[in-house]
Image (tube, rainbow, N blue to C red; front, side):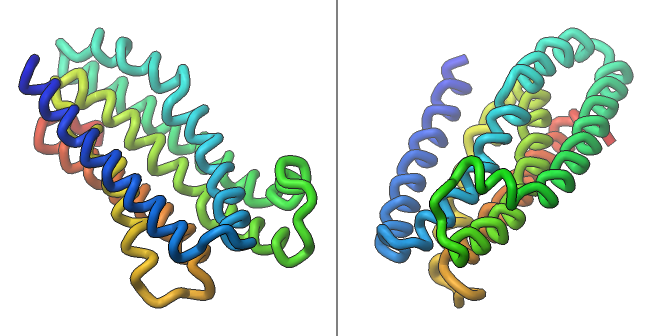
Length: 208
């Protein structure tokens, strides 16, 4: 128990430090500009739906149900595979729908943007939204890992996102720093999921 507490606390501390560095660098590069307004507005949608799918009641209820089946590897495999497959399909459909309706959603949630900021917010929101697919599946797999008494990967995952955002500020800009940051959110989500998949494979908690 103490080993798990120390591991989780250590990586959580690293995550907080990297998050602070991330915020400082974003403030230095983007500052209090219209680009900052656009990026944080677009990222807000991904974070909002992340709270519903990746950190909400669905994921919370998955852990005890998976734990109840974990004594039988075959049943646990079948249950996890079904839940993650269904979740992936639902999230994919949801993302496709939001891609279509983002102009209307942004008018409601971020009124007052001029035409250029509005168009850029729609573009960046469409880039960041698929992040919820990767982070939601990663959260489900993280729950499986916790049942297996493995907590390190769950604590490391936020560090990956922070590093992705930090690195994006030091590479050539695609158009603006906000574009780089939005793509970094998506890349960070992909690598978070890859970390969870690798950990699940090592612990024989795979679902595929």
